[in-house]
Length: 264
Image (cartoon, rainbow, N blue to C red; front, side, top):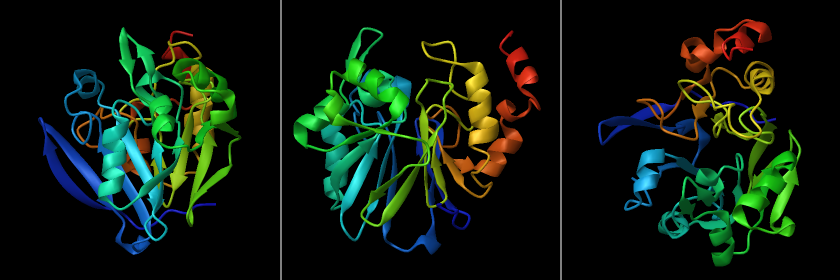
């Protein structure tokens, strides 16, 4: 079980009118490597779709061994790998929060997005996905079944000496998953600082998303810091306690109230 560390120290950075609040955990020591990258700003700077979609990519690793995984590699694989190289880190795997092309690559809205397939052309590493999502990721990316490692909820992916717990959170897609590492929750499109993932796309399920938000993620302590899959709010991260207090998705007190929001 991964426990939360102390409250983060915010660092504000301005980007095209947005306020980016990055967080460091000084009590963690220097071993954990954790970076939040914004598509269109930190990489894929010439990609207009990347700038519009405002996806986050995360780098998680062990500074002592130099091993790191990429969460949701998309838009500019070379740019992501360059960030790792500049930090004296190397990619040893990738984690996929879900199968949508803006997170793992593929075709979307008439655009071809670089992603996991191109990553494997450059380095032979496993793509870690939730078991229910593995086939969908293979379908949209063109990867083979042997390229993707399927996981169950509660599995742990270890990078060097850094443990990353995988939490299955269906609702946005059948196999959406979040990653809990040293008091940080990387949530993909399951949960944003304001709102949550859509359920009107193929595989979406409002009832499953309610269960994910109110039950499956209940184990995540209030002190943990939420890192979402998109920049849909002025801040780029926030403590889970603040999110539970301020985000309207936590207002319904029952599944019935929740489904009523969807006209069910």
